Amino acid sequence: MPSDGYNWFLILVAIIASVVLVLINVYILVHFQHPEDRNQAWFPKLVVILGLTLSEMSILLLPLDVANRSACAESIVLSACNFALPMETLWYACYMAMFVMMVAVVPFTLFYYEQDHDMSAWGKTVSSGWWIGGAVAVLALILGLCYGFLGYVDFPVTTLTSGIAPLGGAALDAAHKCVAPETFAANGVNNGYACDADGGVPVETWSVRTTFPVYVIAVGSVLSWVLFICFGGVGVSAIPIDLVKSFLGRPKKVIARSEYIRIAGKIAEQTKAVMADAREVQREERGTGKTRKTRRALAEINKRLVQLEEDELILQKMYPQGEDRDASWTVTVMGYYASLGGGVVCGIVSILWMLHIGLYMFPDPPLTPFLNRFFVDLDAAFGLLGTGSFALFCFYLIMCVIKGNVKVGFRLLLWTVYPMRLGNTLMSAFLFNVNLIMLSSIAVIQFCAKAFDGYAAETSVSDIFGQEIENLRGLGAVFRENVFLYIFFGVACLSAIVLGSDEVKASRQPRRNLESL
Image (cartoon, rainbow, N blue to C red; front, top):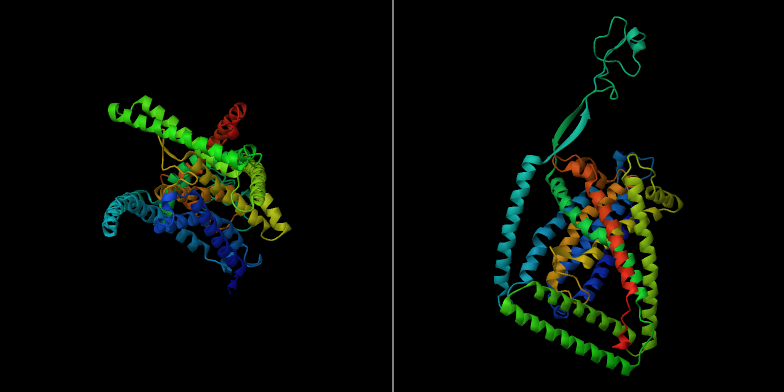
């Protein structure tokens, strides 16, 4: 008789985590949004928050899957256990929701937001609907054709056939491992090993049709890995480096009001000079068109504007506003020390991830279980402690993706498309980058499921990303041979070298001092 394994604590944790993630995403939206979008563009903001929450919750579904697997007692057989949550259904629902968001909702909202403001709401809706409808139709046609011809899973199987022999017979006595089906020699020794998998029996292929959702997830995984390599590979080094850099470049003291007014005036003068240079370059472009000289000049102007924005932020911290300036300054100083502590912790986590890849994921067989053993030992010490640590390690990767997205952005050749900037990000840039983050989360889940297949064994997600996708016709070899994993490891190591060397070079340069303006 089936035994219930309902664990209401897991359901409560899932609800609380969802609420916390929504609040975090609202905070991110408020701090990154452009001043022009304040108190307006409510629907795009809702889509942004929903997209970020979906991508983050998809990562946290993996530790929830692990905890859910442990909801029943060990004495209960897997097939006879009713879990607290239907994880396989939740996984497919989450993935399909993200695909609908990525293919239809976010692009529709982006087209609608960027339409001419003089156009009516109905006109914007119809125009955006036509664009998205056409794109969805083309994508559905491509996926349908690929699924029709390649939507099969090719499982390698070995067909074994056993012979028979009477008890105590000479043939049975001579059989070392099994009774072969071939005719035995006169001396009773078998001449074939078709019943022994180690005896050179040929491997055959058993092909079965996979489900369409699994095929869509597999195709999405290929695109997702490309983004994860670019963003996650950079972010795994950028997070600790930038946090420590923030502490080292902190303002050391509070300035007087007169000094604040003087420096603010200097920043305003430099801003006017930059704008004048920009207008001069624009006039030159209208006359001669875009040339290498004008592109170089615009890049330099953009660099100066970014520096002025940083100067303004530092100036605001050096002269706290409000009634209680001392308390504001104390909070600012504590924030910088928290940044230092966070940088050290994130650096340790990044190093542990790289060691785990090198020691567990690359060798076959693995040299050590490493983090898998660490999580198991934590669970043995205190229930759900290992699952909580497992969740943090997985969630750290999606934070690396977000950091890499903000750090390098989506580039076409040398130009960044829809860059994310603190306090200066339009909703169109938000929508575009949220789509990239949602797509990247698929690779993060697959990566974590493979990295911790010892700790996360017998989970629903291991069935999706394990046997089916790794044996999918046409795409499975890429995942079986860890092609993306090797590239990710190389990009992560290269980004650590590049970012580290850049910071060393910057430290040797004279530090910019606002008080000297």
